[in-house]
Length: 189
Image (cartoon, rainbow, N blue to C red; front, side, top):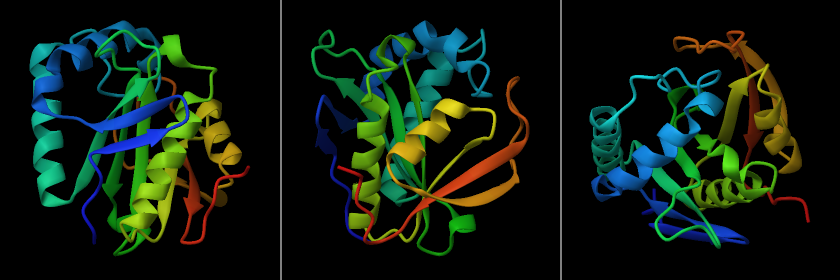
């Protein structure tokens, strides 16, 4: 596989590699988003603090270096200097096949409803395919309609559902919808 770009530009923002130095803005974004994230993210708990954020950022660095995953901060145009709008990751996933990758993401509630996540996921998908991923999958709990809307807007193919592998967050049903982009994918105009 090729090396990932550390910065990905898209209309309205950019993705920038997450590093341990991002502790303050990453922690602030998560804490401000906790109520929004708790229903869907098992790690989003009232106890989330500096220790958890630092461990995540250390893992991001190690996974980038090993090629296991590439985690990015979502930065919105016009946001306060250094403010993170969320996070997006491109992760190697054996369930998608030997060259498959999966996109995971979350967004601060202040930035929802603007198409920011759709454009960020489009940039991540293009990067994954450029790196040689086949396929690039997007999975979400079937109850998370907003995540499904991102996949539909981007023209991902719905390939079915499967049981969740991980511990569930409160709003999750335990059934994951699976959407897929393969080489040749282009976002709708």
